Amino acid sequence: MTCVAIDDEPLALLLVQGYLSKIEGVELVAKFTDTVEAGEFLEKNNIDLLFLDVQMPDENGLQFFNRLQNKPMVIFTTAFSQFAVEGFNLDAIDYLVKPFDFERFAKAVNKAMDFAEYKQNKAVSEGFLFVKHNYQWAKIYYKDIELIEALDDYIKIYIQPKPILVHMSMKSVSEKLPEKKFIRAHRSYIVPVDKINSWNKNVIRIGDKSIPISYTYQKQVYDLLQKKLES
Image (cartoon, rainbow, N blue to C red; front, side):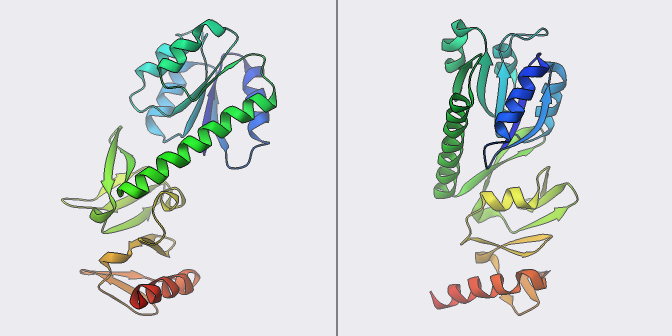
């Protein structure tokens, strides 16, 4: 789970960074002392969880979060408890009043991880995922995906009427896709199993496309497709 921390106090940011380093499954990808730079970063990057101070010099953290177009999960961190109700009205995961210890911090992070897992399971059961495209979230149904291709720092999702580019890693999108419906055939390709027309040891064919199967993924591809044939 990727995280960003925003606080005008550098020591507070170091505390959050230190606490996160003790928790598995989370990564602090950026930290900011002002909301202007943070806002620009959040508009260009997919982030799962935001740690946000309420009392900021440029603008109130609550106001900053409220104006974000693409809102990640948020945990407010502040020395002022009177803003808690307003924070929870913004669907905050938690509200940490400074000074908070590691145990209280970890409890808040675990709540965020549980909620993220719930959302992912719900998306899987309903057959879609959300990706950020053209500065907004787009719903992509699994049944509409024809192929996913890696292109440097982006992925290309082939859907009709035309493919879309998403600033996302293959690892990240793999984690969001159901394992029985999609398979990694190559470091640059993820293939929807139901769209496969034919395959052999080295190549998968989908329509007029031939997707190479790298040696690394040959056994994984073979095992999954054999199970499909036997089912």
